[in-house]
Length: 536
Image (cartoon, rainbow, N blue to C red; front, top):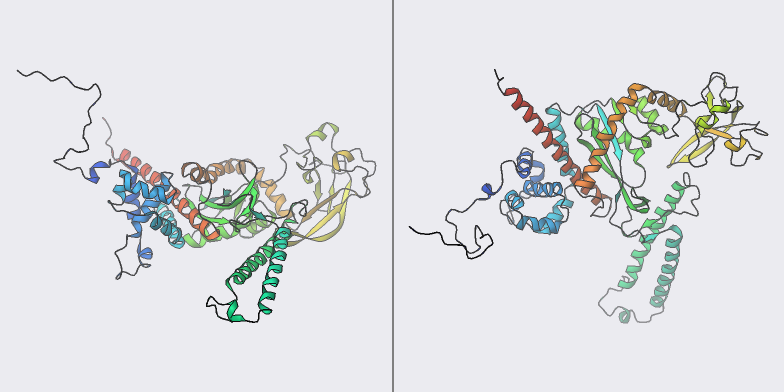
């Protein structure tokens, strides 16, 4: 009877030494568990229509290409895994068993991945919308109640390499002098052949001068853009001359904006519209600058036309309760649940039965204050429609004193002014005006959208609106939380508005894919539970 030989080494032996032959080779299919997420991604994308992608290929000549569905699967699965670099994706394809299984052992280099990711914005948009249509067919997406929101994502640009209009003009003047000097040298040259002895034709500028002309054209374009930005900023920036607009030179399409984490940097403004019922993204875009409130009507139109649905309600934060949006949504008979951007005040004491009487002394400290001026906010003044005037907290009347044109965010509108002529000696002057002894009285303004704001204020005070509005945060903020935290998109890799729009579409598509897989898994579990026989 043989005895078991003792182990020579204390440590565990390798179950499969590297040089050992294997009699029954393991297949790729055996290496991936049946419940692995990569199988769900592969199965879901196989259901989509790829004819539009295939139409971009010749179909007869050249080396057989990789089918676009394979590259889409790789890119979307990489995003779900938080892998964004094309070189890292190439590494995963060579070394990670789930990626190797997904591409069936193909070798795909990073340049192919990078070019494919950049070159198909239209098809990517169609892909995520096809997923939404599938959710509609499954009756989990209704698209009657939408949530709209925007965020900021860093641009692939250097914060400190920027131009202002003054700096760009100074550079242009220096360049003009260089061009004039170069042209003078050409004009005073007697022998053009000696000047163009490099084979350059006599009717063309030398390469150095051509480069100067290109730089001049770019500087002219930058100056025109910066001057327009300064004009737009002057309507809402307190001192636009001391704080001129800055244009990043690394990515001129981006804008210097406040960061979510603090400070300022070159940013883009990505947007999403989500369905409140299922949480999927039904429309997405990237905007230039802090203009997300202007996108509401356009994005609602896109959703209604793309999916042939009727939108009944849109939820958004205070950025979307602008007068233009409120009026337009009322005209379209679309309910907009969005609080007004004004100081919060519980049971505003300015609203009283007799407006000609001052607010009670014990309630003065509860009156809303403007967060910037620390004085009485406009909401501390109550409008009397019958007399077309405002009443201040002291019970004094502010009659209409005229009107003027006002430009805000590039739009011109008429503003009505209401001025108090009885401010002298008012006991509340120090709470109402920065200079209590100023000759001019306190002025309050409103525009043509003021009546819509009043109706919106009353609507948002109802218990029903408050309860429904609570759902906005989850549906509206979840996509940004997932895309930034789980998909690691806190800074765009591509530059230029077209590049970042395409990059954002890929991440929105990955979010929809993840959301749809979760929905299908929940539906499958519910079906299995329903089909189980009851236990006697």
